[in-house]
Length: 265
Ligand SMILES: N[C@@H](CCC(=O)N[C@@H](CS)C(=O)NCC(=O)O)C(=O)O
Image (cartoon, rainbow, N blue to C red; front, side):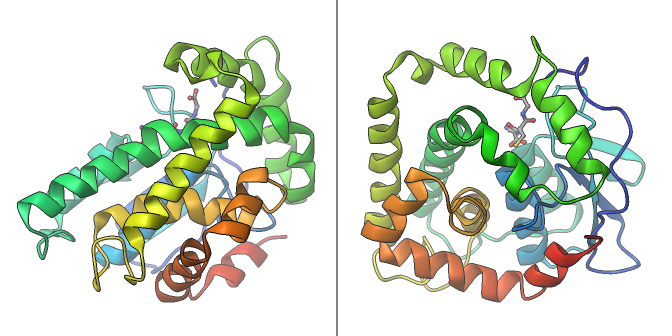
């Protein structure tokens, strides 16, 4: 998705917000019929904001940041991009440390899992959404202008999402593998997360920490908003602790999930 193909205006009022006095606005792919936002990184960011208790407003948008990616935030008139840099920025601004209870070694493990999810597992899941299940998108997009804009973005060949994802996957290297091998990579990543989670309530123990926002962003979207995916079935059939983990995180940090999904239909 490049700036050239991004639809420049924001989608109509798909904003979900935690408070009228919010001073952080998140811009990201708007809601679908099954989740309060379309993208795993946007779900990660909103989950972090909720974990940190920072009031925010969400605006569904297809407008890319200057780095050609979404989500991004506007805070005190300043645009901050990339969820990891946004989290670091907000941690400083609001004196938040969701990892304060972790040892140095645990902090190292958290970063390793975050990278596994965002820099590796993200690709097989993106592949399933934008290449294998591309035609099913229509089933989960809401009946708003977002749907039309999403389709324009998705199909505006040669810069459409499908070819962009193919090129990005090739550049990353994962796109050079067969479909079966890409699924094997996803299954190994998901199994590793599940093995490390074990019977703990959150990845790093009894208390939530920053990495849980990344896991819920990606695996939450998979479990609640991608029920037609082969990777979804794999988790459901083989990794029950990940299923209950997603339910637990949603219950704790997204009690308004259904209200957000139902907004502006
Ligand atoms: N590292 C970025 C990744 C964000 C990302 O990949 N966003 C996707 C949407 S979920 C995107 O903007 N894709 C467009 C592209 O790669 O051209 C972050 O953490 O914010």
